[in-house]
Image (cartoon, rainbow, N blue to C red; front, side, top):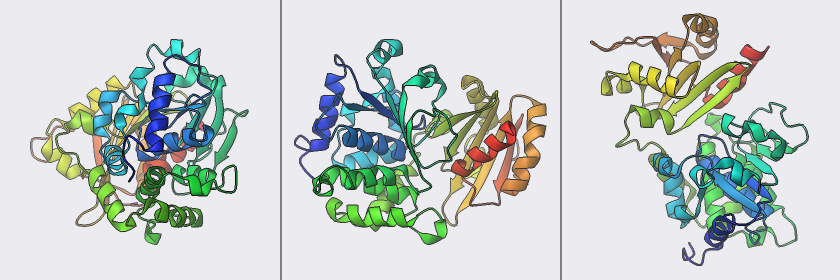
Length: 368
């Protein structure tokens, strides 16, 4: 990788961050509130595309969480470190405060890796000008220029725009660090392009084949490093685990928060005998009508679990049958002395149903 100080991506980010304090911003580029690797890298990548890598106030990438919470994003921190990108140059949510003051200087939003504004930004919906995403299209913001495609990673769409950008030599001008950022993101989102995972498309394969020589990285080793970092939950308590990769959706008037947790539910229940209380408390903190945790464990074999809390028993009765039939659920017996309260813990037999697939299912259920 290039020297961190001389790296063009670092220079772009540093310039964008400093100039944004006093200059108008043509496009604020940001991903979803979980601020996972795909959202972080896609925001950086699209901002680079929109600014041609040279115009730091044409597009400013925003990480829509507080700077201190970035410590929980272990895979993003690891990839930034490995590619030589300085996390201190990133622009975080608390750099925006007060929000209204900055929004008066922002001409437009470019959404990546999501196509519905989180509550904190919803009142600025008229600013949505661009959408680039790989999730199901919710058909919001009809005046926005949209590219919503069923590929394995939003970073694939960003990469295609970068590779096919203006000028015959556009693809040759991709910095090594940018290629590595995008490459790693696509690999982790597609499970290293594994066919059985059912995530990678021919477009993902084509982009990886283009980026790998530029990044000059062994894809298998890079993927394994990201996967290990993503699974690193050492030092995290229950609240940290709930908020490290958390998304909130609104279906009609129902607020549903879904946390993705890389820890088997059975282990978590033993690790924290007050887990149910922690889930209920976090649901209150998020003002969620429903809070779910979608848990994964990869060794010795891949498994899924789900915990479900509903603010009202009627709401749980409403969705429990739908969840049970679609996710193939089996109740997890609690360990001795464990109080479940109003939280329901299950093993998930349908291993292919992830949060990405659950969201449109819930949207259809509540909005039909």
